[in-house]
Length: 104
Image 1 (cartoon, rainbow, N blue to C red):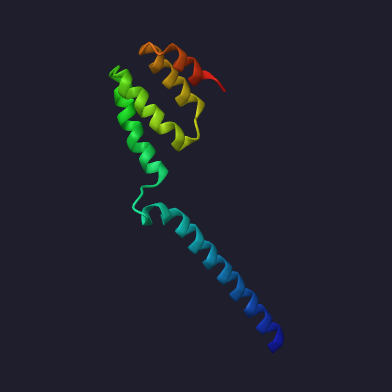
Image 2 (cartoon, rainbow, N blue to C red):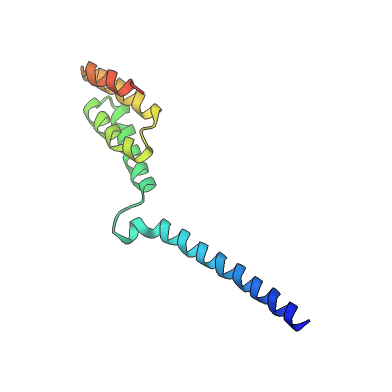
């Protein structure tokens, strides 16, 4: 009986240790960018998105295009953002750049 209880206790301790290590790794990954003084990508995206959105709605196409070019790498080149960038580039008369932004 004692041996069986000891094995169960060791298994429970092992599961607890694995859970703790997993939590520490996840926390480290989430906090790693801030530990270096760099904001996480989603914070930078939200800040940039708000500014870029305002520029695009105000038809400030240069600022709009620049903001979109900054946002694209943060979201792995999302196609919807590429399309808006192509439209802003077309408004600026950058036809070749606009066509390039639409390529997959």
